[in-house]
Image 1 (cartoon, rainbow, N blue to C red):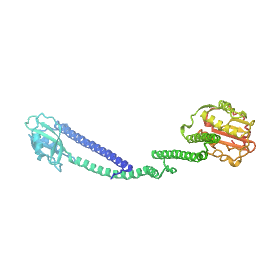
Image 2: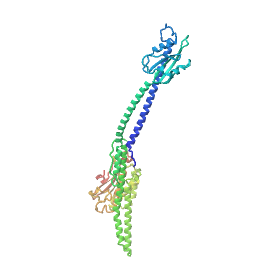
Image 3: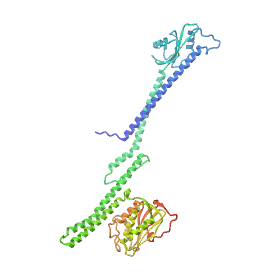
Image 4: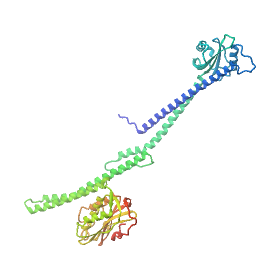
Length: 492
């Protein structure tokens, strides 16, 4: 059975491990520093006592007219009596290696009974300088220094020993260490509790994310994760939501493509199949008619598939390739191309001298589509005008025709896929796949704008591509006045 360790547990374990290591290092360092300070304090006390004894032996601590010490015994006796030992301090005086004087009162260690120390002191050479040493005793380690002294005219050699027991100071350090360990353990427990709660709150979006991922299916991508806070987890949640939106858009586009293709291709396939089933191959004229019909239906299917593919690609980031587009040049180029579409009065009725950051090929495609749509619903000699205008927040490109117009009931769905208008007059909407205006709308949306229409029945229609002024690269110093015929009736 596989054991799964959650992120929350791993984060908490890592945090506690690092905290424990940090507290251990800090506590160990503190104890080492305190141990070092203890030894420095003891050594400083020993040095001060040695200096004081030497001053006493030199006659610097008594009255100026006091006679010198007659012998070593009297010097050592006075030195021991004058000492006021601290709790961890004691002394010992030896004459010729034999203990002679000890301080009165309670002592941390009785040096005269420490044979190892006595042997060391008895074996010191007469010229041995006072050095601070450590010796183990029944009362624990002792830090000491021995000063040898002689009196002129006497053969005795005295040894004055100043000693400090280290066990009391070490015991205090041990108590401090135990207290630190208790406090550290309590702190680790508190860190663990707080860390568990905080990690749970921080990782809650991840748990919600996992639950959402389990609930999401290929047929329902609408679920979104609530975003709270402004930390990295929240940013991850927002990123996942954006990814789900992209997946949903891609899925919807794919599904719509399949639905549209299946619906629209079924009719021509049925037509082709029906004619082929009743075809009499012995009749040449019937074969020719059926062949022409089949080729026409295949061409229509090819155009339909091409249009559906373009609409499916319109939501991809690479659908448009922006670059500098000069509006004057764009309208002139389109006018030159559309003039071959039909015998109409082609003209540019308004323009603006601006440059846009846009895809010139896509805008040309949209204007050509609108122009072709206008040709289909006008008669020879009718006016089809191209134009452009600049507003405070928009740049508009339009194609206006003087055809029969569109009923108001059809304006709301004119840019939908297969959204043909009802037959009126010469029959707007009775030709084509119904995808042309949807492609125009997709091109406008891909540029951050939208497609609009204004129409008056019996007077004509104006189709416009409205783009935001944020796409402007270069704007004129003044906005030229523009009159756009029926443009003022609905497209603003």
